[in-house]
Image 1 (cartoon, helix red, strand yellow):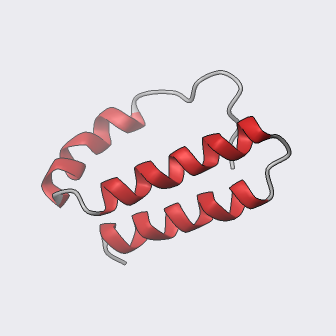
Image 2 (tube, rainbow, N blue to C red; image 1 turned 45 degrees about the vertical axis):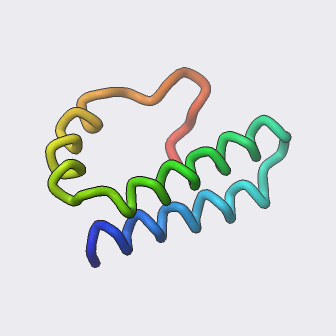
Amino acid sequence: MTFRAEYQQNAGECIRWAAKANTEEERQAFLEMADAWTVVAFEDPLVIERALPLASATSAPNGLREL
């Protein structure tokens, strides 16, 4: 699977989670994540590859759970 296809799939999952959200705040957060995945899906793959080590070194903000 290409980066682009994987990121588009992640955006779709976020949209599905938004539909099942318990609160408006959760729903909005999932929609914002879907938007971010969609933007990244169309970025230059080299930029994404360079950013991956940085992303894996950070932790999720408080209040977010593993999915």
